[in-house]
Structure formats: structure tokens, C-alpha cells
Image 1 (tube, rainbow, N blue to C red):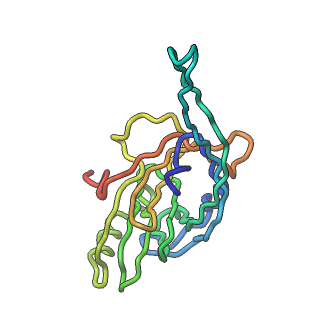
Image 2 (cartoon, rainbow, N blue to C red):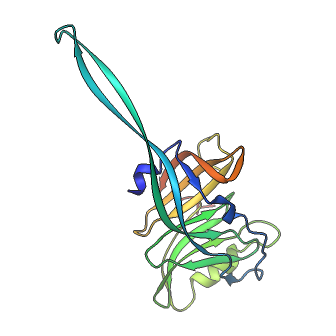
Length: 201
């Protein structure tokens, strides 16, 4: 179902909740602003049919577009400056943003599956703190990636989201905010990512 509306042109509602003005405890794991969200996604399905004309001697292709709405249930994980914000996954898709070089990771801590958004860059870069945490006792099966990376292809989009699905698939979603409604994001491009993408620098 998810793949049906993770396509260019789909509109995701509920994006205002990603804007967090809270700062966490610097260089530590925190749990701030996490929300379970059910949002409507508008998407288009295009089908083509082949029609015979001139007694079957010629054919033409007819393109049909139908508009749909779907409800997407996911857990929203905001960026928290200078901290490692996490949520327990509990089998849900976890959507986080916005990304400009931060790390998104899925891992197990004392048997609990979690997803986190690791703040990187000034003023409080959490990469070293994250390295300490993920090598600690009780941590295992750590999978991480950078939804936004300097080696990405040029995408004409304003903002970048990261998604880790309930079955462990990683995505980058490039979006533009709707010009008249900051609660809406319009998908520009989607790319499935391999574990470890962007982590070599």
C-alpha cells in the first residue's frame, strides 16, 4: 500500500508537526515531540489502455488518471537540535525530518526496537555521542543512513524527509511545502536507500 502513494505528486498532510522549537539535552538521547499520526495522502493512479481504430489496423493508447485518498498511519519523529531524538518503533513506519546531513537509524536497545534522528553539525554535533551510545551494552542490530547526502543527485525540492518502514526499508523522500499551506508537503522524488548510505564520510 505504501508504495502506491510514495510517488511524485502525492500530497502528505500533517507536516507542521515536524517543526520543533524544542532543544533537547545536548549530546544525549532524548524522547521529544513524538506523535502517532494518521494523515490523508492524495495520490494519482495512471492506467493505460490500447484501443483499436480503423477496423483494427491502427491502435491508440489512452491514458486514464484517477485521484485517490489513502490514510497513512505512521510515527512522526521530529528533529531536535543538539540531541539524539528517538522513538520506540512498535511495528510502525517512522517518518522524520527535516534532514540536511543528520543520521537516521534503526536499532535495538535492551530488546526494544527504536528509531532515532541524530543531530549533526554545529553547535552540538552528536556523531561522537551516537558512536558511544551505539557501541554500548544492550545495543545491537544498528542500521543507519543519511537521508540527505552531498553526493545525492540534484533534486529540485526544498526539504528532505527520512522514512524507515515497519518492515525495515529505508527511504529518502524529497518534498516541497505547499505554497499556501505549510501543513502540506508535495512529494517530488522518492529513493529507496541501502543500509549505511552516506555513512562513509
